[in-house]
Each structure stands twice: as C-alpha cells, then as structure tokens.
Amino acid sequence: MNLAQWLERVAKAAPERPALFHGRDLDATYGEFYARAMAVAGWLKAAGVGPGDRVGLFLKNLPQYLVAQYGVWAAGAAVVPINAKLHAREAAWILDNAGAARCFTSPGLHEGLVTVSDIPCHDVTGTDFEAALAHAPLDTIVPRGPEDLSWLFYTSGTTGRPKGVTITNRMLHAMALSYFADVDEVTGEDTALYAAPMSHGAGIYNLMHVLKGARHVTPVSGGFDEAEIFDLARHHARVHMFAAPTMVKRMTDTAKATGESGEGLRTIVYGGGPMYVADIVEAVDHFGPIFVQIYGQGECPMCITALTREEVADRTHPDWQARLASVGRAQSVVEVAIGDADGTPLPAGEVGEIMVRGDAIMAGYWQNPEATAKTVVDGWLMTGDMGTLDAGGYLTLKDRSKDVIISGGTNIYPREVEEALLLHPSVREVSVIGRPHPEWGEDVVAFVVCNGEMDAAALDAHCLDQIARFKRPKAYFALEELPKNNYGKVLKTELRSKLEEQE
Image 1 (cartoon, rainbow, N blue to C red):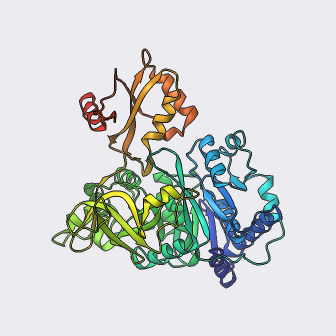
Image 2: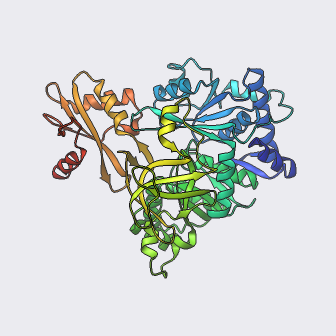
Image 3: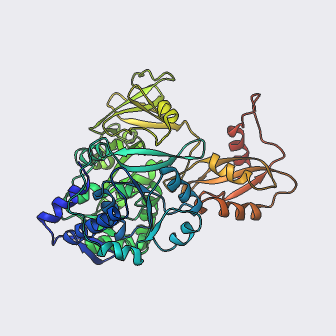
C-alpha cells in the first residue's frame, strides 16, 4: 500500500487534530496537512511526475518537508532525501544518479543547487510551492505495492561515492510496526520533535507518528539547539525525538549547567554512533528513564536491534553494565547473526561480521548490482560492522570493518575527503583518519604529503569548495611519506600512533 494512505486515514477520521508546528506555532491540522499533500501530488502529476519517478528533498527541517514528502508519495513517486549539510555539488550528484524528476529545496540551499544542477528545483517557501499548494488536488492516492520504491536513501561507502539504498514500502511498514513492538508506544497525544536532520533517521520516524495522529514539530532554528529543545518540550509535552549520542551528551551537560529538568521529554531514541556507558548513565540519572537505543543502517533503516528504556535505566541486573554497553536485541521483524569471513554463523560470544535478514533489509543498491551482490548474500545483509552476540541475544559492536569516521552521529568516509584533497595541485598523497573528540565522538584529520611546503589554510579553503563543511579535516599534518606495507597499502594504524604522539 501507499504510505500516504496513513495520512489520509487520520485526516478523514480527525481533520481538526493539530499536525504540523513550526516551533510553538500551529502550521496545519491533519485535514490541512492532507489537503496540501494532495495538492502537491496533483501539481506533480500535472508536471509529468508519476509512479516510480524520484523527487529530491534537499531542504532543512521545516513543516513543508512533510507536506512535500507525502505529496510525492501520494503521486506514486519516491522521495530522495538529501542531507541539508551536503555541498550543492554533492546534492546535484545524488539527484543526477537517482534520475530525479524534480527537487524541493529551502532558502540557503536552493541558491547553490540551481547553479550546479539542471533538474527543476522548487523552493518550498517560494512561488513555485505556492502554486503547488493552490493546484487542484489529486483525486485519489496512487496505489503502490509492497516492493515498490518509496525512499531512495544515499549512504556513502568506502569508495567515497554515495550508493542509493532502495527502501521499499514493505521495509518502511516493517520498520514502523517493529517500532511499536520493540522501541516505543505512540499515541495521538504525543509530539515528534525533529532536531536532527529529517533526511535521515529522525525524519523516517515521522511514519509511526503520522499513523497515530501525533503532532510534528520542527524547531525554528532548523536544527539542534539545547535551550530550544527544552522550551519546546515544556510547551508541547510528551515529546519524542531521535538524537545522536553526542546530542544526548550536550543536552545532559546543558541541563545540568542550567537547571533544566527535561520536563515534557517522554522518549529520546539514540543511535547513529557509539554511546559511552558513563554518558548514558549520567543522562538517565538526570532525565530519568526516557532513553531507548536502536541500531540500524541505511540498508536496514532503524531496525536491527533495540535496547528498551527499562534496560537502559536498569541498574539492578547482574549484567546491567554489559547490556548497557550493547545495542540491545534483534527487533521483531529481523534475524541477527554473527558470521565468519564466509558468512557462516558463529556461536555466541565469538566476534564476527554482523548479519541481518528479514522484511526490513534493503532490496539492493540503486543501479549497482555488483555492490548489492557483495552486501546481500543468501538473503543476509552483510553490515560491514563487527560484533558479538551473547547467550541472551544482546549484540555488542566491537569495531567497524570500514574506516568510517562518525562525527556527531554523521558518517564521514575518509576516501571521499582524500579524493577531494588530491584535487589540490600541491597534494601528492593523503590519508584521512578519525581523531577522538570529547563532544562529537570523532573529528577528521588529514596526513598530507605535499609538493613543497604544506599550506593548511589553502587546503581548508579547497575542501570548503569541494565537500560539505562538516567533512573537512579539522587538522592537517605534513609528512614526507605515508607509512605503507609491502603491498603499498597505507597503514592507518601507524597514522593513529603518530596522531597520539602529536596530541
């Protein structure tokens, strides 16, 4: 079925129920939300957008985000959510690779994108979107099947080039229903607060809140601001939000410094990076049992394991510390196993690659059968993460098999940064690694072999012109040569040792 039907059902049953808020201000009831989405769908159809087409969403967190998303779905098309922190050139590459028919944008992003992309772009605060909202609505939602593409999510790989994860209606149905079973309950009295990018997990969690007729709040700041979150939680009450571990840490530090109690916060689901045991213990001690942990990937969105609020808050179980260091147990719609190099399941306690299968795993990578064949093997999603399962089914992550840097809950892929730096004429060789950071978890540093003296300021300016600001190195270290093994592979372990010496 088409996911827009969930919105339709709530709108017909309770059209006056408040739906979309910008900060404290009501932007639309469910009746208005549905009417706007159907008008956008009618406008898209008139523009030639139909079943199976792709439409980009390159905009910051705004109420119009959900209107555009459900309008795209109602028209039978799929959304291509793009991280608003990406450079315009990166967004343009994704749109081109997806074969997107259109793209919805917002101020600050629209201006850069239109200079580098030929795809029609429409600012959701501009006249194009006004025309869409004034268009005759689509008569009926376009029927879609369970295996039809719904959400084309681009996640980078070790090659540095993003890969499109084909997320189907079946996957999102499974994720939403598993949420109710394994993560949290939702009622019409709840509030979803989008303080993390709606292009990622925070936004994908809109589904279960639409299904239950809950409120949806986008902060006026457009992002993560601790004081604003506490204010909105007090005002709206019964707030759910998704947060990276670094966001949880910042909220705890701010609350303790300012005397905030977290009034109005009902559930914080955290994931997307490593959570230190000491940090979550401190957070629970201050805010109470409001935290739930999930582990997922774009290839199995938000839906591999979960650690319940009771388990996160428990300090009486003999193994509570080990459980708190884990990412929980398999969610209801998937199986989780640990495999050896050949994918053969290993017994409890042994370290291997985390494998997942079930209705929530991806259909494959967009137009990339080779990558799909390497990642989905005999029905198992090979996550590339290493871990161990204990006898109780608790999964603990041990290491990442890929050299991904996770900064503030966002994945940064070294190869992509390295390729950007290698475009600078002074750079002969480069290797990028992650450096521990007390607030962000990790940040990016680059070891550079230059033709002549290294100019860090010039390299930084070059990166800002090539890639998103958050991906650029925060420090540059000049080397005469990179350490390599006999096969010419850069030894990043030696670079990490050099970094420790430098620091």
